[in-house]
Structure formats: C-alpha cells, structure tokens
Image (cartoon, rainbow, N blue to C red; front, side):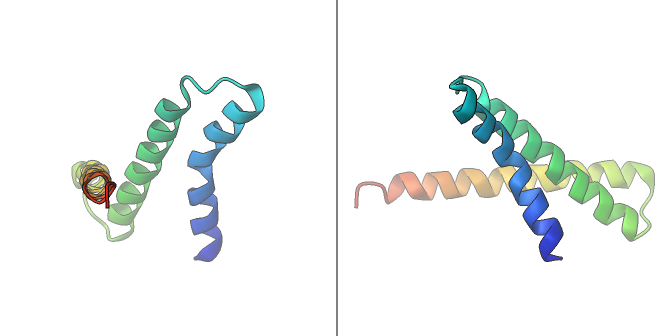
Length: 86
C-alpha cells in the first residue's frame, strides 16, 4: 500500500527534521536508527502474525527482519565506500 509506505518511510526522518529546526544534531542518528529498527521489527512481527505463526516465531521473525536489514545497510555502506573514490 502506497500510503503505509509513505508513512513508514517518513517516520525515521522526523528526528532529522526536529534536529534541523532546533539546531541540535548531536543525537539525531541514534533516534533515526532506533525508529527504523522498531519499524522493521514491527513489520517482521506483523508479517509472522498474519501468516499465523506462534508467538516465539513472531519475535524471531521481527529480529530476523532487523538483522537482514542491518546486513543490507552494511553492504550498501561498504559498496558506497568502495566506489567513493571513482
């Protein structure tokens, strides 16, 4: 759904916007990462709930989503660093 994508995509930007307005950018990245991790966990948990998994499996699915997103983020960052000098 496009609306949910826009809402979930906007939520991690809120700390960035608040920090720009207040002029305090010291802790914005911690909040951005925390909000993103909570969103990813929630999406994994909800997906597992919708398919009828057990409660322990729901939590595992939430953590699994965060884990694979972190790997994708690290890979993207690494590839960006590799091609930074080109």
